[in-house]
Length: 118
Image (cartoon, rainbow, N blue to C red; front, side, top):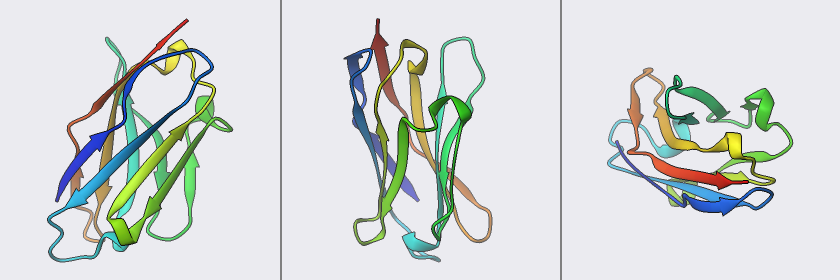
């Protein structure tokens, strides 16, 4: 599966960004069967899980983004999204989308940079 993440950029604190992740190349399973996750990695820090959306309706968020970020998906468009509101400088990181198929095979996108200035 190939994943193309987009939507990152430079914004001021308090503003919003919407990240997109477009998937292609699925063969064994339809996009709707995949769990989708967004991760981020800040300089000098380990990659952390930001949000996950199951193949159903289950979602889970990193505590520090709860109430500010929303993960969603459009199976008809083979796409996932991360709406990020009230951004803070500590949200600055490279954001990656990851998909996991029912056989627990993972694929990663290339990452998109989000920079939040104070």
